[in-house]
Image 1 (tube, rainbow, N blue to C red):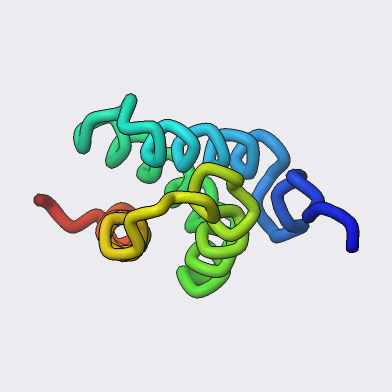
Image 2 (tube, helix red, strand yellow; image 1 turned 135 degrees about the horizontal axis):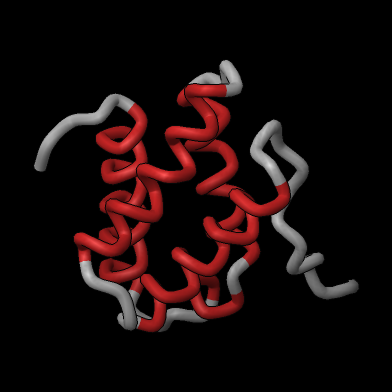
Length: 102
């Protein structure tokens, strides 16, 4: 069985946004990003998505698929921490897409 391809999945997001999303998620897993920086990064991705008519569901699919490819996310021993972080990121993406204030 081969290892998963670490390349983010092909979505309607630009290659730059997919790479930025991967970097944001990697930093979230490692704990090297604060909420304000994460929100700003997700807002930039959401802004591109809205400008290009990409549905919020596609942004969430891109986030979840990219998350699933991260070795750090897959191998986190603490299941509760991993799932909590993943759902927090999903929530932040939704807020960013709809411009909700925190």
